[in-house]
Image 1 (cartoon, one colour):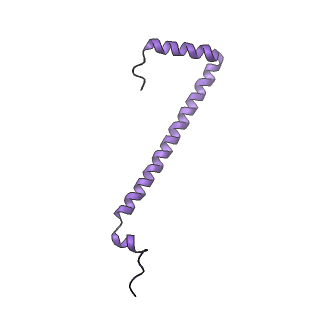
Image 2: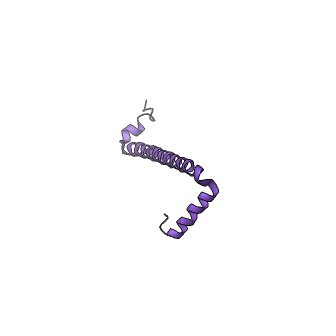
Image 3: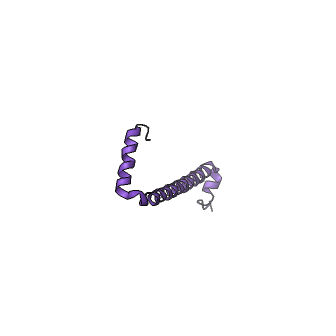
Length: 78
């Protein structure tokens, strides 16, 4: 993702962050970024699991035999 960023650019970004937030706020900022990253990963995993469950439910419905699919819908011949 950031493979095209050189070491010079990283130094400039770090200096700008230090200038904007100061040395005292930097650990607090890093902690907040870490917690945000962790929360985003958690949400991503939950969404992935939910989509997998939906896909598995659809696959199970597709594999059901034709009799099972029409059982509830037919009224029968009288």
